[in-house]
Amino acid sequence: MNSSAVSQNQTSGQVRFQLNLMKSFKSALLGLASFAVLLTAMSYTKPAAAAQRHYARTNGACLQVRTSPSIYAPVVGCVRNGAPLARVLRYQNGFAKLATGRFVSANWISTRRPSTSNLGIGGTVTLSYGSRGSAVSAVQRYLGVPATGYYGMQTRDAVRNFQYANGLTADGVVGFSTRRAMGLL
Image (cartoon, rainbow, N blue to C red; front, side):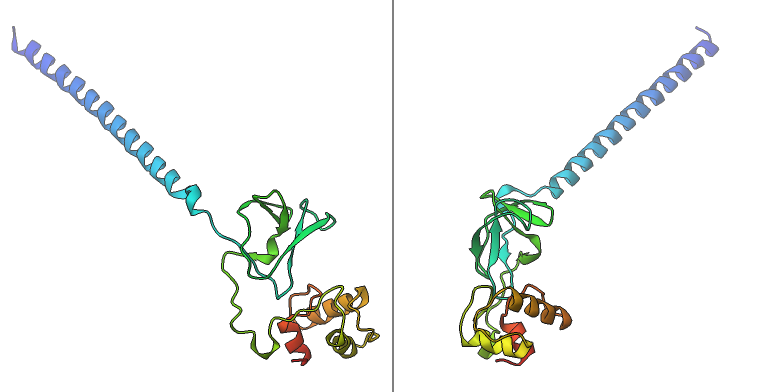
């Protein structure tokens, strides 16, 4: 064998070795990238046991439970402020679908349980549509609507307007914050 044939064989062996090394490097890089993607995907999924807990978070009124995700759907229940909700499955049209198959307004739920320790002198008394009594009459007198002692649509609308004008949650329910803003505590 002459020296030029030996050097040609060595050169082709080096070329083959370099090509195999590049293929191995690309395969290793591809495997590493796939592993990174897998780890990233696993970090974004939550196990079912660690599902987020939700609570009704209103200003003292109850959270209305509806049959479908619409404000026109029938109200079939009420969840008091601070009470835990069934697991939230998804959000649709501004409503949260619960594991029970019912819907609640997504604006009135929270992952933190509302504190009731700072209610002050006003306590947990709330007035809403259908309420009766002297407390309703006091609110009506303050708002300038006929003081019938019955919390009807006219009172609810006047309360909403007051709440909106004073930067409160305009839900038409007189809870602690609304009574405090009216000076009725």
